[in-house]
Length: 140
Image 1 (spheres, helix red, strand yellow):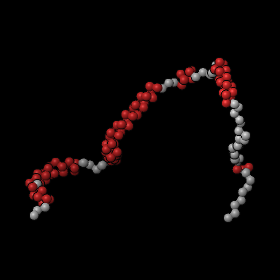
Image 2: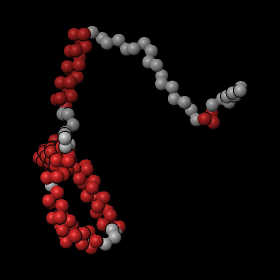
Image 3: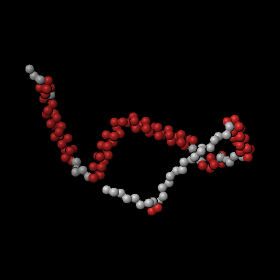
Image 4: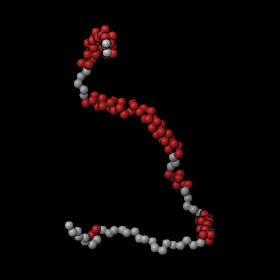
């Protein structure tokens, strides 16, 4: 009994002369006509290979990221205001506003009662320069 491989090879033996003729007439001359690769050609080949490996398999992901960045840029440009416009809008509080704030704080103090101050506020330790530290000796 013949294996599937033998059956396939026997059916396609008639195409071997045609493939040999194609190789000798078209493919072999095209391959030998190419010169030795230059540095620029090697860089282009490396760039093309990276493009095929990194970008082409995930085209939809890259397109989605590009769309997201475009939307972010449009929203940023649409909502941008210059610093001078913002500075003009911010004004120091008027005397009436300050008086109302003081009154609010007094009313809050009357409602809640006085807020006790913390008894002891711990000081934060700030080390001095190395030259002012006492000498330390280590025993091995």
